Image (cartoon, rainbow, N blue to C red; front, top):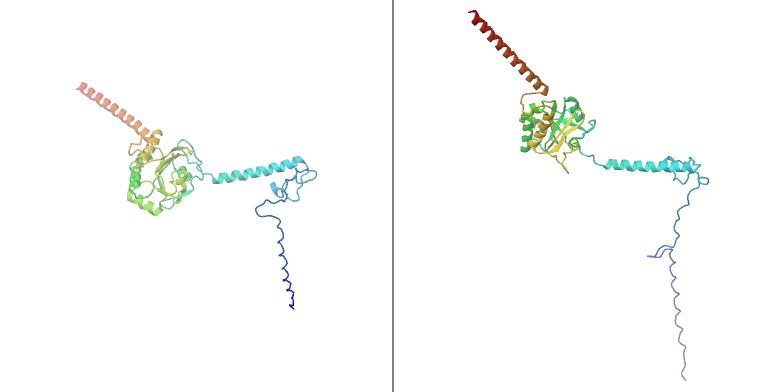
Length: 296
């Protein structure tokens, strides 16, 4: 007789893993959280600050706004302060326009401080004040180079007539005082050379080359700050521009040795007087000769 045995019961299945708790925000889906609504308009009777943020427009935590008019006044003050701040920022970043021929400049503080080749600190305002009729600034890129040597010598050779109406002439570059002194001495220049290593004055007169360097040119300003010439040009062109100014001022840019226009006028009057005196003397001599002949 066959004995039947019972099969052992299969092992119990493991308990199911616990699911992760649902997150409040599903990936890739917009949050269902309600959007923050804009607070309603303030009622001065309920809100003593009229809805103005803490500290805005000078409103402190102890300040109170009791009426709608007061709230409007503070709001206007906040807006005015915002506009003022914006305009200051814009003005700070704005680039000053270069002066043009026929325009005018405020000499005080214009172009900052520069140095003569002798080491004296000066400003354009001081140079103009010390002049008789105004200042000529001709710019050159680098001392002792061929083009710049030609330019300074042209101004040297025409110095007397160009300064004849009271204009003070200066060369202007970014060179050091040592380089400019050597340049002045070697070329025997009768005028000073100005050193502007930071190009503050060169930039102010509109002759700075971007991103760095100096544009050859000339700038002439009179005692009142009126700009008589402001232009770029080659060595001869810069001299010719000043000659035109001298001519308009009553001088003769080609007349060597005349220091002032009024001296020229006085000299002409003196020549006429001398000529008249010579004629009178000749007439007297002739008259005396006739009398002598008649007596003999």
